[in-house]
Length: 181
Image 1: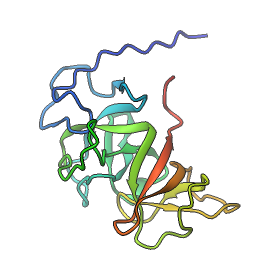
Image 2 (image 1 turned 135 degrees about the vertical axis):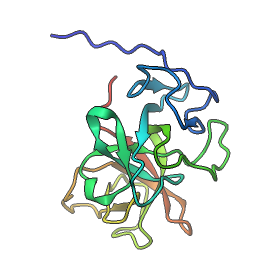
Image 3 (image 1 turned 90 degrees about the vertical axis):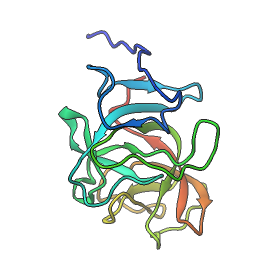
């Protein structure tokens, strides 16, 4: 059995993975590194695809465009390969209006409670009972399935109720299968 080691070595220039995005990689070897914050949320340093048609936005779901190179996209064509979520709120619980741009290096949230953007008309309304949150055909957005429905793609996590119903944002308990703990 192989040893599994989690070294907390990620340098975060802003002190908050939700607001840390750069045009160039600050340290060689940092790309793909995992970081667990003081709230138990897990993050991973990735690079956004410079050719994606929809730039990341706060609460956007990202998919692996090239997992080996730690490159993500919002393109729905990759929706079976969950990478993580672009932060919606900062570490200090402030609303984020800025998001990383195409081609930038940034952290995506892989585990813990997150706020995720849904399609405008969800299949099943969030009730806080843990319905499946699944990829949608809309770039960077998810949908919610009613209890007992089969998911076409692997679920991103389970819903924990609305964060902002008007803005179509839902609390999600993220469950990424490639997480380490």
